[in-house]
Image 1 (cartoon, helix red, strand yellow):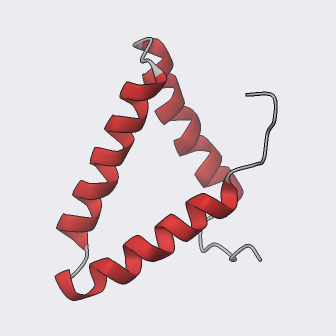
Image 2 (tube, rainbow, N blue to C red):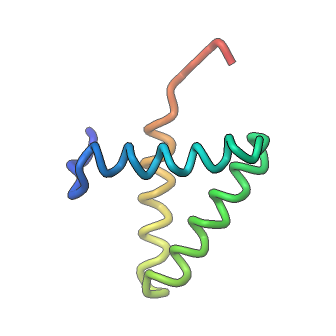
Length: 75
């Protein structure tokens, strides 16, 4: 079941579009994009979340990521 967000769809879409535009502007390959986004996530967790809470946040993030992936047989 999706979680309600404290952020508006418009706010999320605007920021997501900006991030995608930066990656596309630089013709960033998928593997590099994933590496950069992973590094960004790691940095956010390590600098913004107390060490004791990090494992729970990471587990929640992994579960949300897995739940968001569609079973697309075309790829």
